[in-house]
Image (cartoon, rainbow, N blue to C red):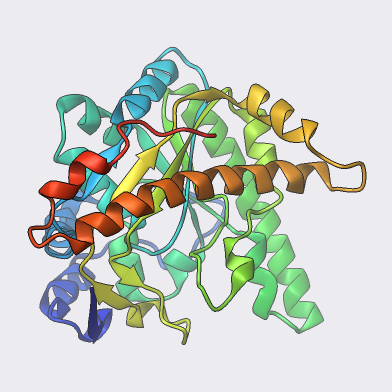
Length: 317
C-alpha cells in the first residue's frame, strides 16, 4: 500500500502548510509545560489526511473493553492503556476511529491523555503541528540519550530529564485521580524493522503498572506513516492501509504482574521480565489480528468479505 512520497513532499503538503501556520504548540519542553492540552484548531485538517489514508475495514476490535476501562476510571480507579507503536499516525488514526463511533467511544477519546516524548515537540514544526492536536503529558525518555556522547552535555541532559520527568509523573498522578485514561507506548519509540531494539519494552514501564489498578493492551495492525531509515520524521512515508486496533479485556495490573513474575528465572531482572511479558502479550494480539487483516487487503472489495474473520474481542493470552 506504499505511496512513493514522503510526508513533507506528499499530496498533503498544502494541508501541512496550513497546520504549521496554525500551530501554537511550544517547541521547547520544560518542567513548567509538561501537560499540553490538545489544540483542536488543526484537527479538521489532520482528519482530512487520516481519512484519506485509512482504507475501508479499518476498525477498533474490542471497543467494549475501552468502555469498561473508562467506567472504572470514572470510579476513580487508576487506568492504563498500553499500546503498540509503529508510527506517528498511530494516535491520530486511533482517535479518528473512536470519534467516528458511538457517543461512548467519543467519551473514551475525550478521557485519554497520551504520554509523549520531548522529541515530538522539539524535532520540527511539522511534527509539532501534528502532535499538538491531542492532549498529552511530555516525558524525557531514556532512549533520548543515545546520540549524546559529550560527558558535559550528557550530565546536562540527565538533569533536564530529571526535572521534566518529576513534573510529568506528578501531573500523571493528578490526571488519573481525575478519571483520565493514561495511554503509554511501552516500547517508548516507534518500531523500526532495521533496529530490533525498538521493539523491546522499556524497563521503567513496570513502574507504571505499580501505580495503576487496571490495564488494557492495544495491538496496532497497519501503518499509514512508515518510518524513514534516515530518522527524519518529516520524511516518513505516507501509506494507505487498513488500520485495526485490537483491545484486550481489562485486567488488574497486580494480577498481570504476579502472573508474569511466576515465569521468571532467578537470574532475570524482574522489571524487564514484566515488560517483556507485556510486549509478548501485545505480539500475540497483533499476530492473531494480522491474519484477518491480510485477508481484508487481499479481497477485491476491501472491507466486505473479510471483516467477519476478525475477532470480536481482544485477549491478553
